[in-house]
Length: 176
Image 1 (cartoon, rainbow, N blue to C red):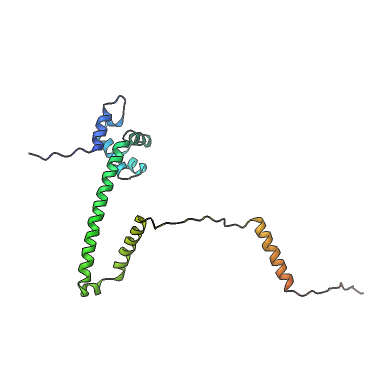
Image 2 (cartoon, one colour; image 1 turned 45 degrees about the vertical axis):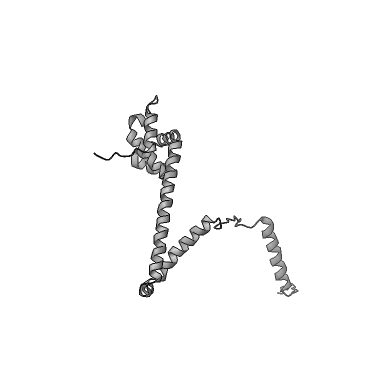
């Protein structure tokens, strides 16, 4: 007996919407509607979805609005899958680190960059998870204010005057 394919919540949501009155994409092309919703759930941009499906921007936005709950549920499932994968890879990395630490010859052949880059990424993710990885953006005006410019000019004039010698100059009359 053939194995039944599990129907996604997005496909069920499309099927439920297809029975509504109107000329919705769910009624006209449920497979395309489901494909667009899957792409939305995976985080693709509307422009990317337009390019892949040929759907109009407005159609994708309306589709997104009508299936908000199903999209949220699908995104939660995708996030959980990503967390499972990340945890599995973390465990494999720990095992590989243990194996590398127990084999001095292999450790000697390992480039330090091959250890530093993953360490930096892992450290960054750790700090982010702990809420310690904060970036402060400070905006400063590049041009000085008029008052600052005038003050700088006056200071420069005073500095020049202090370092200069006073010379008395008399005009010379021309004789014939």
